[in-house]
Image (cartoon, rainbow over all chains, first blue to last red; front, side, top):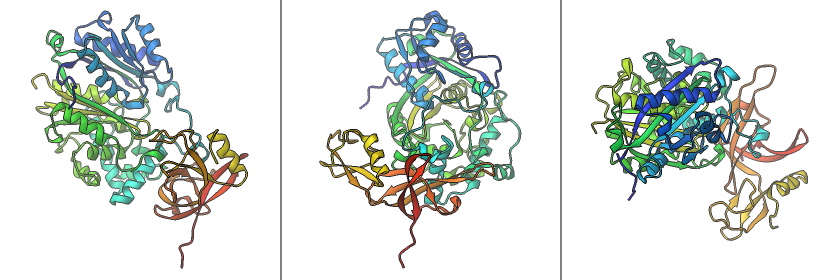
Length: 382
Length: 125
């Protein structure tokens, strides 16, 4: 039995800024602008924030730096660095802390200028001693090893990985904030340059700038704020390994366990979920996470994504902002699925709006399928 | 042989031409990479044992480089003793390395560092 405070906390403000290219800004500028926008969205101000949940792309003490930048003195500063899943974990921890009364207002934020600063993935990660001599092109090669194993075990094809890339692009074409909005065909996909077999350039997430922020309060306070609250119904995490060689079965991630706990805490099942956001650093991620989060059985994910099933108009809307593959990927992407889930549940997603969306899942992935964290959100009326 | 300084001892064995892994005396479970404490149990009873060097390719990729720089293989090898390690299968085209292939370890010198790589093993007649 879990004592997760189901529905007792809510996301009351959400914002993104600078998705794509945001020249002239430092990472903290971008995060600060998104934070100010999210607070404005909530009808709150920096003076209300007493819990800060933040990690900076390169500053490992970024939680302190960002509090200083904002001019706030948080009671709780969570600088967890489990990679791109950190933001789902922030939601989980903030829910407990808010419900316990330790804090009253949580700000969760992230920003990166990696694309305009360096043009490539920015990371503080040091090569691991027992991997480095073999020169894997990380993170791509680690995900490629998972994809190769999955294809071997389940007979999946490049075309099925391509279906994930095509669906993400079709959603991105409906999202004015998305970075890649030109049409993408299967021929384009199959002709794209191989990076680390079986993954090609179009299996890999974008390298962009971008920032996102959300604001959380207890649900009782949320009722009096500017926007309809998005209820935090369940959240759970599990870390499994750091390097890919220590994932027991390369076709099964810890999302199976973080997801199961999140559903249990929310009192929901996969069948209840109307819209799905998963961290698609690579095409194989979407397939593995759809399986591990219970939307199809293990080994059937590659067939599941065929024929536009996860694309606009398909049976299951997945990564409706265009995902890390086509919307944005500023190094750590985990907060963007949360913001997109909020927008869908508020009904403010414009051309890509999923009709009557009541329940959403926003799943984060960190490292090389290493750290998994799942958040389940409900619309105000749920 | 008891373990006191895992990384340094592992490397010293390689320099001496020996591929050693660890085994926990209490559980009998083999361990790679070298550690001071057994994973999962916390037992401080790891000892060095000679690896057979036999393994099977669990997964494989080709890191593609722009010619003339050669592309190369990166693989995960399941050792006969149980642990898995990242390595490289050499002596064949990188794309010819396949999941399920039997492989055998060999110690090579890479820029002055001893490194374990693998060769394919001819299937028994």
